[in-house]
Image (cartoon, rainbow over all chains, first blue to last red; front, side, top):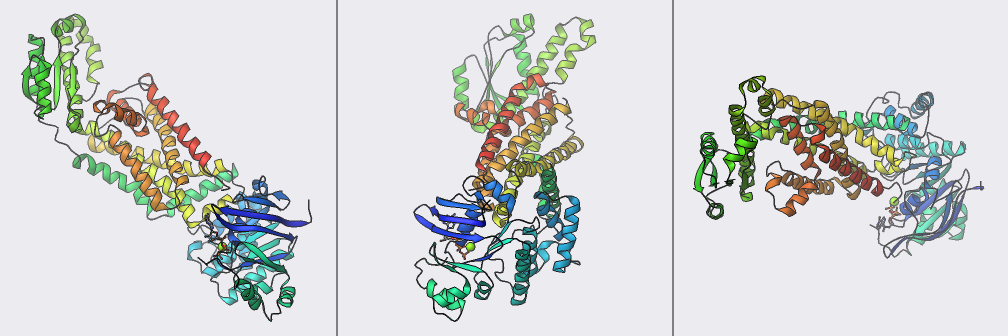
Length: 247
Length: 371
Ligand SMILES: Nc1ncnc2c1ncn2[C@@H]1O[C@H](COP(=O)(O)OP(=O)(O)OP(=O)(O)O)[C@@H](O)[C@H]1O
Ligand SMILES: [Mg+2]
């Protein structure tokens, strides 16, 4: 088993003539919080779906948790957690029922589900809401719950696609506390975001422009390299070069 | 196994919490079953019948007068040749031609077997279809009377012939008896086909299917987890419908309920496979709805519910045979009205099993966890 959580070499995805992800190469270390940045339409979700075994790459190579993205998608799926850009807990199930369902399908026993569920509910302060339909929770709570459910089976890597989109600053802060907790528990975090303050929280970040990765380093090094005071400036400097119109 | 249980738990919870879905599943079909047979009550009286009598015997005259006195037919012509009768059909003066071959009487007396030919105008298929069915019944009745007259008294008393015949077709010529079982099938079909297809596409639309696809849930588990709830709903709907048919329309199945439900069980698997297949090809509920609607329209029109399959042109017969609903309507009518046994509906069973295998196989191939 390799030292790296994710190894990715020249990974490419085409939709017809359109190259959505263009020969991207990078490694993610175990236990790292890796920020995956890029403007709208840069190809972040497309790249992430390939890494999660949801979509076949057109060419290139990649392993996730040591498994090949072309051939071992099901093995990858057992070892990762994924929180998609669209909210995907069941709104007509309660908090408890969602935990039970998603935890259960990863093979957690009833006893484990009970323990983990209690722990999670206490941690999120959802004791009163445990029997409420998820659909009736405020967005920030939903996102925190979705994240906690995505890692309930202690995956090796968790993929988060814009987990804090539309969430208020206080809740975003709490969300990042959860991410740090997960990382401290040995879960590698692969996260996309449009918030540059969040980019600063990552160990390393990559910035995608038009399907390519144009920059990859720690936030401090990137600021030095681009002679910028903040990540915002780094991002502007790179995003300006984009030809692809956002959709 | 545990995964499947979790999936089923989730599905049933969602279905029973869906306040919009419950009435569609349970109330709407029942209301339709109560209204449709009344609203769709085609006027089956005054069916115009042209008789081609090549025998000219007392029996043919008795038979024709029995037909005329049934109240359902109007004899619009009495010919010795086919051509003028056909002309009547062409001019829309007649809906059905009854052709009595020469030697009708002799055959009937000797072999107790009346063979006559019925040709129906497929343009007005309902009238023709129902007309043919009624004509069949009257002829069966007539045949029965004749046989009773000719059989030795003691055998008639034993009642063997009578019992056999009284169960056939639709002796009171009750329109409901003919239509209700068919409508019941359609309702189960619409609920099963639509609801299953929409349910899966809805998961696509809101994105939860992506979450499912990224878990270790296996393809077959997901599919079975979706099928079982709607299969159960189909069974329940059919049962409620059967009870309504009994207590509202007085339609009591003559044949074996076990056989009827066995067929229903397979039919539902085929139907749900069809819904699943649509869902794998659709990206949103609207699209799935239109595709399902398109096919269900075809199913309805080709199924032999309104237009008897026997009256269809041969190309249409092929389509009818390739429609799972056709065989089920056929079987429900056979079991409910005639008391047919397994050996009578073997072919339909085979057809339905083939549909179940093909539709589900195709859907499973087409459903991908990794796109
Ligand atoms: N299935 C598809 N078929 C064709 N084009 C696609 C498909 N999926 C994505 N694309 C295109 O690929 C490009 C990258 O999309 P992607 O969703 O990966 O961007 P993103 O970086 O996640 O953007 P956002 O920040 O808006 O989520 C877009 O131009 C999109 O239109
Ligand atoms: Mg995206």
